[in-house]
Length: 477
Image 1 (cartoon, rainbow, N blue to C red):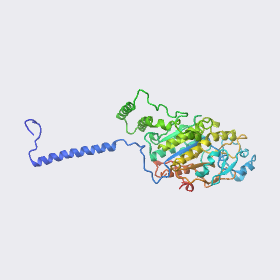
Image 2: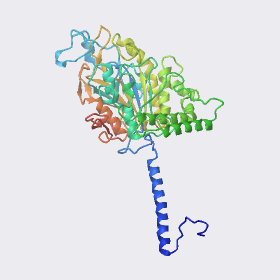
Image 3: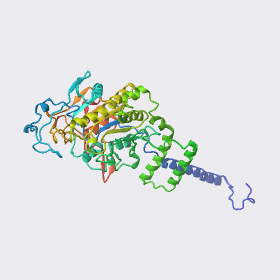
Image 4: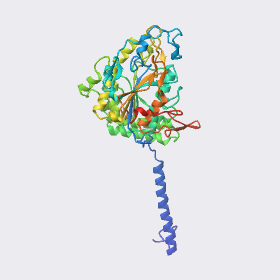
């Protein structure tokens, strides 16, 4: 070094000065390294990345077959010979009381025209409404003793999905996504497929993330042959151009991003997923390339089963590609378009079962032959059942005191019936299970502990099962 060339520079003259200056330099390098590490730690980590379960899981994903409006247990999975014998009579006092919306005090018991037959090695009785599902009964655990707290659609639907009877709480799909994250980077992790006939009484809030961050909200698929619009890139735009555009948008967003703005984070993530979907989702969502045998299995192409069959097949393809939770809704729009048989139980349930029986059985068989049923938990049910008494002569009112749901796959021990209602189907009397017990069991099969899966909200750690849910030990492996 030449002092005359750098008059303001300091020249190290002694060994002590050299050691001092060198240490300062090394310290600067160390500081730079620490700052870099801090930047890496501060870099955003997607909350949707796959997470470790609390314990060994039997299932990786859930398909919920939501029969909106309240399917009758008396016409489907819970035969009641005594009800037929008492048809037209006033309910005997020994069965107790029940609160209804529309049934009058002098209402008469209503028998069923449905016939039940034993199926499979298990010999479980199933109604003639579900001849195809009946062929899968050895894989199904029928829960005949379910009950909830509410007898009106909206509150019961909230409770079915969120464990609470009011809106504003996270759905089970959002809780599962929060607990486990996503296995797919190119598909949404929580998908809702509503019925094309219209909205339900509880509306979209029953499916939503509630107080959980917005990134855990569902993706709502559209009805019809194009469940997601605009997946195809415009012909004059390359994938690389599209990627650069989205990166530019991301940079603009992040330049003004408030770390506490959850909605903004969710919007950025939605852009990212949408871009990745454009490269992979079109093939997954395109059913035209499916083998004809598969389309026939689901009833696709047949007017009655085409819609629900398409959505059930999509559900299989989605979980096959890493989607955590898919809900396939049967029933939408006003009253009788759902499983809401106030006027005529026969007409309503014959129509709704004919739309869903073949697709549901196809889903179970398709999952099983692909080796996916063991890792996919399939749940069937509505927000309540139907009353033993007649409403208006031929219909049945809402009934929350005892009804049926079922589970299959995902480590569930099929071929069995758990619990029972009384002899006319009024009350759950043997091993009754509440919605929160259904939730606890679903979480357990996914490797999630209901006590550990919590989120702080308004001063307390909230969870899906509210206070406590019982795992239905009879059906879990």
